Image 1: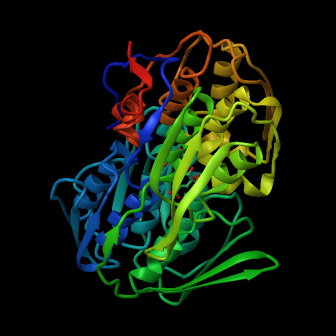
Image 2 (image 1 turned 135 degrees about the vertical axis):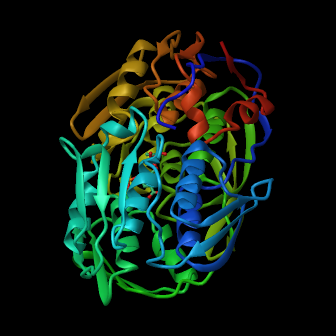
Amino acid sequence: MSGHGDPIPMMSQRGPALTGEAHVPGDKSISHRSLILGALSVGETVIEGLLEGQDVLDTAKAMRAFGAEVTDHGEGRWSVHGVGVGGFAEPAGVIDCGNSGTGVRLIMGAMATTPITVTFTGDASLCTRPMGRVTDPLALFGAKAEGREGGRLPMTITGVRDPMPVRYTVPVPSAQVKSAVLLAGLNAPGKTVVIEKEATRDHTERMLVGFGAEITVEETEDGRVITLTGQPELKPQHIVVPRDPSSAAFPVCAALIAEGSDVLVPNIGLNPTRAGLFETLREMGADLTYENPREEGGEPVADLRARFSPDMKGIEVPPARAASMIDEYPVLSVVAAFAEGPTVMRGVRELRVKESDRIDAMAQGLRAAGVEVEEGEDWWIVHGLGHGKVPGGATVESRLDHRIAMSFLVMGLATNAPMRVDDGGPIATSFPVFEPLMTGLGADVRRA
Ligand SMILES: O=C(O)C1=C[C@@H](OP(=O)(O)O)[C@@H](O)[C@H](O)C1
Ligand SMILES: C=C(OP(=O)(O)O)C(=O)O
């Protein structure tokens, strides 16, 4: 999907307290990886609870183009009949990853050590995002990339027949880059080593273990050292995708700011590489509890209970926590507007290269809604006004960015005047049931 349909203007406003249960969809990161690793296995992988957002559907389509048999059995149950490591066929057409950075970067890694030539593209947002961070390490294996200036899509990658294993220190905190190198390393002989100075989400490492690869992780002074032995035969898996903490963030934050609310968000994966937002909210004084904590599929899981929290205080978010909540800064900045005093967010340069420049998109929308924001290249400060004091009444551009659209629609549930976004269409990339889920809690969120 390189284009989007007509814009879908949406609005939200204060209404009754939010109550009830919010069953958010499957985790987007794990859904992409389930399809890709399933396609690289020999035999049939069954996936339950796959996120059926457009980003993941585009990855499913891509896996079919590489020769895997991908079947939708209904109600979130999918199967992938894989072609094995090194078994990708050359696709007949261009691989269009739509809006998805994760999709395009992981698939580039997965094909780079197979001798096929593949052209990748995406929508107007994805075509502005940097791909050099992935094609640089893929070149070390011997893959060649030709794209637009600045390493932008559309881009053609020619995979290498006799790849060399690599040792690579990831220069930016990015699970997508780390994962692309590991997926490329799957079809290189010997040991591929990836070093990350800051821990990022570790789903690829955990899932590779599940699929039967030989992979070790050592915590050292230089960071996390991940060693993968190439050319395994990956064994198909039965995967139950946990619910997405990044989607849970929206009903949780809505409940914290909307008067009188009490919402349960069951079965949320609390892998420490993903749970930074919830820790931050608790430090701000949010009434957010983890009920029924347990382990499922080797991951910590709990039911999140969020209640209206009128007395939250702004805090300095530890920069070391950034990677574990990188997609949650937009909605955190909304909560920060309703807390007392400044919330300081540093070490967040990566926010500038997401689906939009998220610091700029949020800062402009928050200012239009009457909230003071300061910003620098890798930091920003939201000056919270406190509960009941945020004016709102703005129309904000969502910039082809689902998280910007959802964040401002959450904001409108507690501002003095309604909030509008020019296009809620991108929400379907990660959280297609956002609108019915929020209205099911009692929120006044609608197409306008
Ligand atoms: O690996 C992943 O599944 C993701 C990694 C993160 O991106 P970066 O690797 O660019 O930080 C995150 O923002 C994205 O939503 C999903
Ligand atoms: C950054 C995101 O996704 P991606 O990089 O996959 O486009 C996101 O979902 O917030």
